[in-house]
Length: 372
Image (cartoon, rainbow, N blue to C red; front, side, top):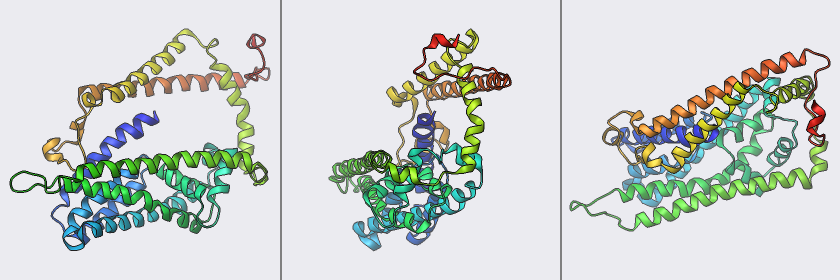
């Protein structure tokens, strides 16, 4: 589900939208375009599914295109990096203080994100550190944009240390903006149709690789340090205060969760329910395989430097080819089926929980035949 929503649907539509913005702002001046891009970038950062890299990439293309004559290519890339960092910091502050802290008032939200779990408390320990440290920067740089800043707000961490730790994100933003500027330069042609800068295509590939390495490396380092904090600093993590309201909610729901696990065991569910689950799995598998192995048959090739009017006939939905729509259909069918299965399971769990002698799911160490 997450792969299809974030990496496929949102990613494709984000690129189409940003390419449309690039096309529409081509005739404006640098500072007007900067204002427009900063507002759009801020709004996009506040949307949970939207990743940050396409936003930085668009800044690199648009602001370099508008600013290269007055600032030069190097100056315009630095200008785009600075504007992107300002937008990122503003978005992070809003996500933490307004969205995150507002959501922290609700026990159900704190319970949903598992604030009492070892991993969440380890994150709180690392991210809440003052100053700039490698683990802290790795988490803020490598984590998904929206959850990474909303979670500190839910955990009610101070804003200033988070903002200080976010400054090194410029090392991710700069190569991304540079790649965008280089791709714009690669699209420039002389009167004879030859590229003005024939070397930029190769350099753009290198900078794109550097961007991917920084992003992926940050994710790996973040995972390592979170695991390390949960293990090596276990005493500090265990000493952190538990959210009592969430603990009480978890205790109340524990029996119902066990009943749900019992009711949805494979050998216990009816054949028609098994069929729903298998069909849902088949649909989501087929959907993912289509977009993963046959992307050229699912989507029209469209980049940030392409024109929506020329490449997609002014219709963003034209990005999807027939096989792409088929993949989306399988995805929607899978979501419907898994929702039906989950609803049936919750209904059965509530029915099971009504009986005082209901048998909850047993520990993994206990043989399955003892359930009968």
